[in-house]
Each structure stands twice: as structure tokens, then as C-alpha cells.
Image 1 (cartoon, rainbow, N blue to C red):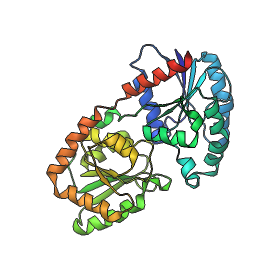
Image 2: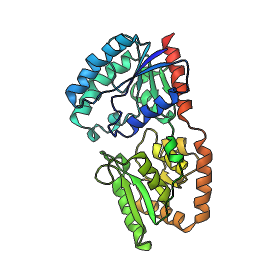
Image 3: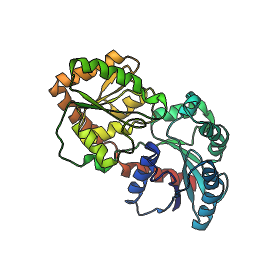
Image 4: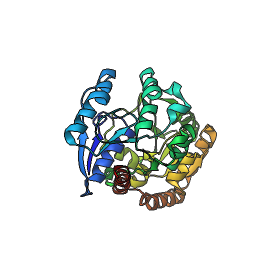
Length: 319
């Protein structure tokens, strides 16, 4: 089967979007029955996006004689190959104010057209599938779940000195709940004045390589991830791979991903978040149990499984 995969985000530090495509490429490398071509470009901006959608991808699909074209959110509106879309979440339907005018325009005008044209829509969790069916009920029968996975780099052991550090993430929109993480840290810091906080993302630790991020996980006492909304939660699996205990929001998608291998908190209660951090810092045995459970939970996720399940979707639509 000939598959054209839209990889325009590769090399752009686009977080989960880029990690998904990189992981999928890695998983596909273990499958013999797929002939994969990855579309790449260094062009950026609105005009570059429109050129990619309306000119480049249809042209590449025709040249490659693609059976399937796999894009993230927005794909070509015509051309050879059956369209498969990846939708990481539907946050833009819940909170459009979190997105730029360009993004809102693309999601409002082009995304519904692409959903109609797509032969299948892939999402990373059953939570996102429920969201998709809520906003677009007519997707029933063509929306499929393929869980994501942690990159192998996070299983690589490196020498670090565990120091009083907790790790968190932020993003360009408020969904990561960074202000409550900072409030919780302020509370914890009163009892642990030597405790440091590392936040990865815009305005804090930016452009962090995977190897450096692996070091951050491994030197931290815990990952604190109090997001208000996520479509999956790759940092959870990355922390499991690195052997770092995890504290996460009590939201459905995190229950789906972390299972019983994490401590859960109300993401809107800074004091509760702080209390769980202190509990973990005071209880090394609890930390060890969570690390063990995390490594067991991690076995349910791999990019090879993701690629195999994705290929099954391709086979379904190519019939």
C-alpha cells in the first residue's frame, strides 16, 4: 500500500503533533506491507499552509500514486488517495479563544470540509472519540482510536543526581493550567525551600531536546501535570519510561492513559495539588510503587502498535 504522510511539522518543535508523526514513522519502519512517503517542507506561514493543502499534497499524491493520504487536522481537498485525518483533540470547539485567528479560520472553514471528505478520522484516545462524536455525530462509523506511545529515548538511562526538583509543562494556551502549578509550587516551597520547579514550554524552558527532557524527567522527584484538557498526555508515558512518579489531573483522558499508576488531583485546587506533591516527597515507598506501576502500564503502549492499528485503518478505507 502506498501512503503519503503529511510531515510538514517535522523539525518545528510542534509538541504532540510532531511527536505523533515521528512515532508513526518509526512504527511503520517495522511494517513490510507499507510503502511510505513523508511530505516535508521548511516553508512556514499562512501562504505556505495554503500551498501545502491546495497544491503540494495533491501534486505529491498524484506523483506517488498514493492509495492513502494521511494528514493532521487539515488535508488536501481533492486529488489522488483516500484521505485519513488525525485529530489530536477538539479543544478548538470547546475553547476557540485559545487559538490564533489563523487557526480559528482553518478550523472553522477547512476542518469540517476535510472531515466530510475523509474516509477515516484517527484520534489518540477514547475520550477524544467521544468528543468527536459529540461535536460531529455523523462521524459515527469512521472515527478510530490509536493510542500513542513514549519515544525510546525516555527509556535510556543517564547519570543524574536526584535533586529537589519537580517537573511541569506549559503551552501557548491555558489548558496546561500553569498558574495553578505555580501556586501549588509556592505552597510546597514554604515547606521545602530548596525545591526547584522546571517548566518545559513557552516562556520557560523552550526548545528542549529529547535527550535533555529525558534528563529532566530522571532528575525530578515527580512530574506534576494538572491540565484542564488534553487529547492524550504523552508526558505521562514519557515519565513512566524514565522512572518518574506522576501526579495528574482527575480528568477522563488521564484515567484512560495512566490507569492506577498515578496520583490524581482536582486541577482547580492548588492546595490539593500541593498536598499530593508533599505526600509524594515525604513517602519514598509510595514513589517506588508508582514507578513500578508506571513501568507496567507503559507496556500497553508502543509506536509499533500505533502503526499497526493505523495500517488497519488504511486497509479498511482502501477497500
